Image 1 (spheres, rainbow, N blue to C red):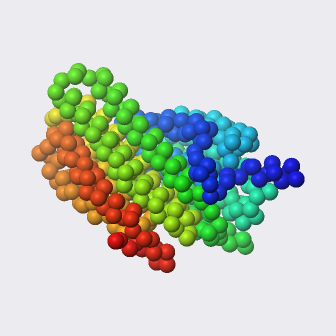
Image 2 (tube, rainbow, N blue to C red):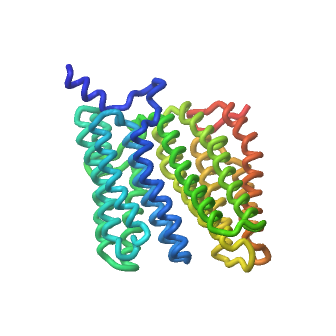
Image 3 (cartoon, rainbow, N blue to C red):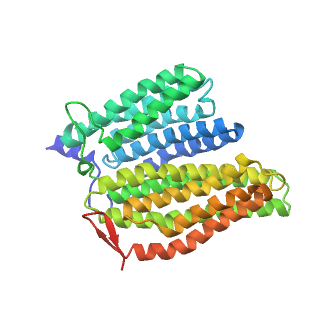
Length: 405
């Protein structure tokens, strides 16, 4: 009886007030990704080229994927048990190595990044398979499938770490393609088939809070960049204006997600008859766009603070507008998946940012950033009303659409 009780404690409880609570060890674990996000933005600033932008995309996808897969694991495992805590602490050590190698991942640190990333993904999943020996058989088979896919992609990660230049990029793109494709295929494996989303008995409130906390991490990086850059410059009217614009942009991004998108997601995943399907698409995939948008916006803030006036290069204009546009696109897709509706405020905001782009040559960096921020503020004002109506709606489970009252 004691053995059974001990095994049962390894799993997160379901359906009570404590089941969705994020633990302190999970918050401690997230500190690794504060460092990772900082490394991503700073490495892009040092290699501010189209090639650097593509590399940023590859590495951001990898960092997000390793974090979200861990969030899924922690949706089932109890973080208050010693075995789970030791796993997270071990992953933190591996994650530190992975994060430290990010700036030189496409140069001399490629093999260190590849090995750390693969060990993180494969090691965590193998450990979960072992822990689930006394748990749900279906869930354990699901993680065996996941382990198979991650082992396959790990071969390409490590081969890419050994290779050079274009070959490394190609192999790592293949590895990411394998990993991003696998959930949509239910981690299908020959002979044992695929996992239906109904097996993913997700604790919706926990998943929503975990993803929200990662958005806070990314926004925190934006705050750090803004404050640190502002402190290094002379505090004249241009610096103060750039600082205020950057701050307002970050605050508005917070408002859009937490007062609109996150509220809607929590409401609809709680009423879904297949929360695993919603969580897989809405949280696993679309939040990558949110994180990417925030990182680009942080880079844009630093560029504008450093050079608020003067000629605006096309690559700087792209970053200034692409950050908010990518962020709004992620929010819009989340709404579409979670609530079955296309958010008009998000769509209008994206269109406005696209319309602004042809005028970049006659605008200063500060002025273009200001117009982008005004667009976000307009979206937040109109979107708050839209969200209030949406969260009073009735989810129609059969076709996953929403009936607005």
